[in-house]
Structure formats: C-alpha cells, structure tokens
Image (cartoon, rainbow, N blue to C red; front, top):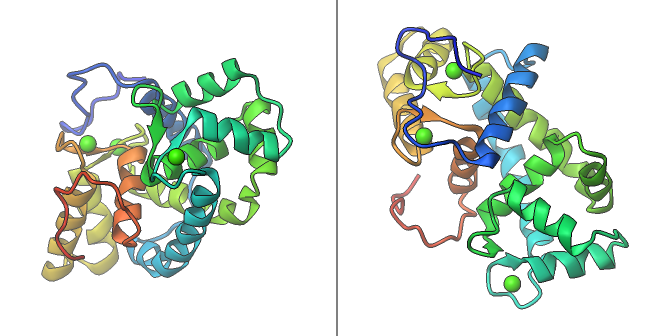
Length: 228
Ligand SMILES: [Ca+2]
Ligand SMILES: [Ca+2]
Ligand SMILES: [Ca+2]
C-alpha cells in the first residue's frame, strides 16, 4: 500500500485503518488489476433498480438471522444460523469472522453492516468463508456484489482502493461531457458517500451509501434523513 501519491488524491491516514478497511482496500486493489466491465457512471445508475431489488433480498436473509428481531445480529444468532445451515464453525471462528468485519466491538451488526459483512464474505478468498458463502445462499447476490465492485473499480481511477472527489468528478465528466446539473448531482452523491467526511470514499462507505440510496437503511445514525 501507499507510495503512489497523485495530485493530492491520496487519503490522509490520520488514524490507523481498521482491519476491515485494510482488507477492503486490498481487495479493491486486487480487483482493479483485473479491470472493470463498467464503462460509464450512467451505466452504474442504470443498474440501481437491480441493486435495489437484490439488497432488499439481503434484508430477508438478515431477518432470518436476527432471531429476536432487535435489528441486530449478534454472535450467538450468527452461530445459530450457521448451525441451521449445517456449517460447523467453532466459537473461535465465528469470533474471527466478526472481528474481520470489525463488528465485535459493539457485538451486533445492523443491516448496513450485514451488507458489508456479506460482501466481505463474498470477496474474501478464504476456504472457511467460501464454504459459508455457498451455504448462506449468496449465489443470487453475487451479480450484485460484482456490479458494486466493478462500479467502485471504475470510479477508482488511480487504483489505490479509494475514490477521491477528483476521481468522482472525472468519472462524471467522462460520461456527460461536464453538463452542470449532472456534475452537481455527482458532487452531492460524493458527499453522501463520504461518511466520515475525510475526502475519500472507501468501499465500505460506498456500500453504506447504497443501502441508504435504495432506502432500506434502518440504522439510527440519522444525520442523513434528507430525501434522496
Ligand atoms: Ca438480534
Ligand atoms: Ca483512487
Ligand atoms: Ca471517507
């Protein structure tokens, strides 16, 4: 990581990146090597309804895991679910899985974190998680994760695993030749995505943004109540 500084595009690492973030950044850098099938920002927008539908299906999976319907999946519930699916994870392995997703601190994952969790499970090439992936019935979600990863890689022009504001503007200008209203929309989208307002968007922030855009985010962070 690091070393490639392009026109002030690089993220500021003021705090050490979380384990999840590092994994995501690495995964995105690896994917960037393979290239992307996405040709324009518009084509990403065209896929929104499909992504929407598929993330709604995630909601169903989430509800199955969330046995006490408190809006969070804790380690115990995850373990039950794996048992039902006949996946024999040890407590230790489940704890690792939670930690890999940075979820252990507050002991429960909300729906948007669950999306990140599923996507991470999808991206990680670990035999343990790839087994879980199959059993969890994620097959139908894979095209959606592919689309999301491809879209992110398309936006990340310098392939450093982050999307900067400049990269976002560049992507939008390429598509619509700098039409002003669309540019503004792009900037607004960027600001919505940049959850921690540090000027760069990680894949995790990108995923969180999608859960909000499709209107299925129910977590109570409520600084983004404005209509989309
Ligand atoms: Ca629960
Ligand atoms: Ca970048
Ligand atoms: Ca950010």
